[in-house]
Amino acid sequence: MTETLLSIRDLSVAFHQGGETSIAVDHISFDIRRGETVALVGESGSGKSVSANSILKLLPYPAASHPSGEVFFNGKDLMKASDQELRHVRGNDITMIFQEPMTSLNPLHTIEQQIDEILELHQGIKGPAARTRTLELLNQVGIREAEKRLGAYPHQLSGGQRQRVMIAMALANRPELLIADEPTTALDVTVQAQILELLKSLKDEHGMSMLFITHDLGIVRKIADRVCVMTKGKIVEAGPTAEIFANPQHAYTRHLLASEPKGEPPPCDASKPIVIEAKDVKVWFPIKAGFLRRVVDHVKAVDGIDLTLRAGQTLGVVGESGSGKTTLGLALTRLISSKGRIAFVGKDIDAYSFGEMRPLRNRMQVVFQDPYGSLSPRMSIADIIGEGLKIHEKALTDGERDARVAAALEEVGLDPSTRWRYPHEFSGGQRQRIAIARAMVLKPQFVMLDEPTSALDMSVQAQVVDLLRDLQRKHNLAYLFISHDLKVVRALANEVIVMRMGRVVEQGPAERIFEAPSEDYTKALMAAAFNLEAVNLSAIRQ
Image (cartoon, rainbow, N blue to C red; front, side, top):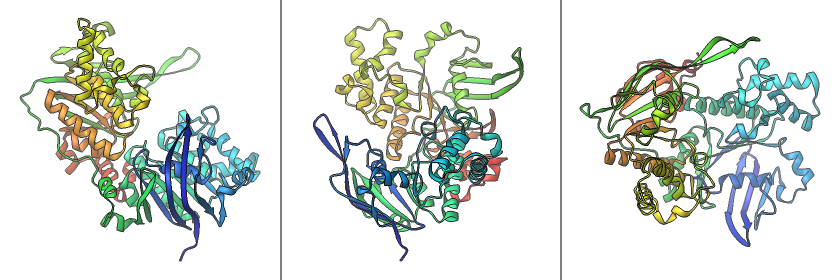
């Protein structure tokens, strides 16, 4: 038997607020052996991250407490360790990678400064020796031209590069245990495949153990030796990965395995009217240099794209971050300026000013990726959804407007009586339903959906996809669906555009794109999304 590195026994976590106590983790137990990867799987609110943060006592004490439990690391109970002992363990013997590297990295310090700080704090390495070790780490995690990146700040790196920097920081002190908390959730499928490949190879190379926290069972299948399935603070099933996938015993595990978005989009009818038509659309951002700030070049975010979108049809736009997907959507809705012809229900709108576009805004709506960021925390749900009606349908009485808000909430599957609450009182999936209701209350013809499911759990994704499909059938809506999640696109889109570096790589019926892609880049995207082991990373890196 391989020696046990971490042993969690009967761990509970309670949170205390306003005289009330809630149990977030309820008597869980599991082990991690040396060199082993254990996945902690469950939906948002299941207690995964709280359990992981308890290992290093990173919870907000005294608001959080441990009614029961022991956490043995190398035979020592960390629950009883002093602050000084924990400081030695944190970042040295046990390190963590978090979901969103942009919020984990210091925006005011360069990459070199942030890695050097860890080396100096834990190993006393400074100066040229620290720079040498930092370069070694950046090269190890696959940062290209690492020496040129030393002076870069986090905002100057892509999401994948930032996550690689986080991994470099985590490996700086050669830890025995790496805790990875949703490290790939916010990344493109191809970057996700690269990060998973990197973590797996580094774990094997350094002989580390890993606790991998995720809600995505597809990732677990590729990286974990054993799985613990959590819901409502309890571990309801645990065992070897192959066994859990082949023969799940608990109903919740079966629910997770079955929660991938399914179904097909409504059939496309070529006789239906054209809602959006674009010809040779370009969005170029100038690059200025020199004392006089002359334009020396352009960033071609969107470079000559044609498309047609009919009523009742969904056009999926896929590609990696930076490919121009969202920029294209913003150009089509005239939220940014562009060149080329854009027609909305037969009217050329490419030359329209902001004021000229305003009467059309109720017929063109947008649903964004992060509902918590797009919903005002100071407004009630009734005010958020009713705001558009106040602007576009001023003749409505207060009672009529309230009735429309209630009907919109009911249509998206929410209780109308909750409309006096505020966004923070709802779950992520409920907030996205509110964002959809805000768009639908104006009875639009065209809706741009910009990554509307990427921040949601798998089962909630499936529910939102079903909702969008039902609304499209009911109202004959035209969707522009922007996403890097090809499984969701496959469930919704009739037509697909594959973008890379502002240009169309491949375009056509969704069935052909998914079943028989003709371009290497599209094939690599499909492999990354549907079979991570088969991904052709060379096609991505070229």
